[in-house]
Amino acid sequence: MKHERRDLGERKHSKAFYLKLACLLFAVLLLVAYVLFVSLVPLRTLLPAYSVKKRGEGELRLHFLSVGQGDSTIVEFPDGEIIIVDAGNGNYENENHIYRYLKALKPTAVSIVLTHAESDHFGGFARICKDFSITRAYLPALGSSSSAYTDFLKSVKASGAEQITLLRRVLITNPSGAFIACISPNGAEETDKNEDSAVLFVSFEGVNAMLAGDIGEKRESALLREYAVAPDAFDYGTRLVRLEDTHILKVSHHGSASSSSEEWLKTLGAETAVVSSGKGNTYAHPAADAMQRLSDAGAQIYRTDELNDIMITVADGGYVVSHPNGEEI
Image (cartoon, rainbow, N blue to C red):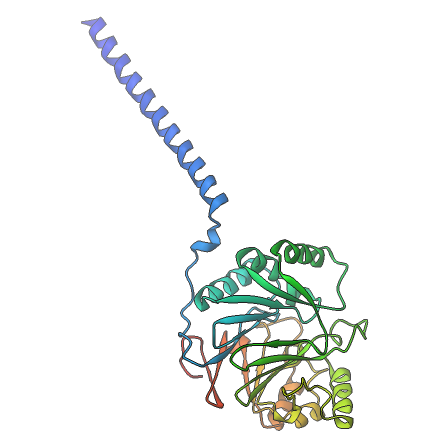
């Protein structure tokens, strides 16, 4: 009887051992499967797309993304091609935010534009270059010696995108007739990256938007002086750039006090102004002085720190400002 009880105990211990061993092997297999899955399928691809209203026939859309104290604007042409102008600072939250937004747009082609070599503008591009097939990369003439910028350039090279220096006379066109014209800088004229920031004029069906980068009053005044002498200075053949016909202004330098001068705003006459800034940022952007000048110029102000992502839909010679889901602001 004692032997039977001992055999029964040994069998119970043996079953328990093999059960633990099976559980351990199963856990190891799960871990191996997870590692293989992550290496082959980045977890980012599992993130759900945002709820963005489907683009209507013949619509061009401007998307001003909320990426904290940084900039990221998407120009979405009527055929689904997109141009990403700047990509925030590249932190985890902002990278995922841009990815989910792009996933919602389902672009037919992607090009990137970096207005100037500051990390709050180029930080997110390295990830975009890995996650999407990039057709062209428009890069500033004045670069940076920082390791982060070097890594960004490596990611652009690895993407195989055509690289184009972003200066005046560079024109981005679309079969719809829409175009993006770079009106500044005319060369690597400054040692200050902000003043050498690209200024882009977006035009479609008579509606024009000015994306002013991070320029300050100095560059604003220089452009106005040049324009006063030669009103056709920024034209591209039959594609006309008339500063006074600006309807939408992407406000320069997150609404800093040193930009958006009274003379600049008066000339542009923009009725809609979009400010990209981070909630509670240490720079106190947007500055009260700049906001007052915009208000005095008659502009309706929309801020990403208050409204999050902002979408402007251009069609039939007019435009509508809304949340990405289509709800009007």
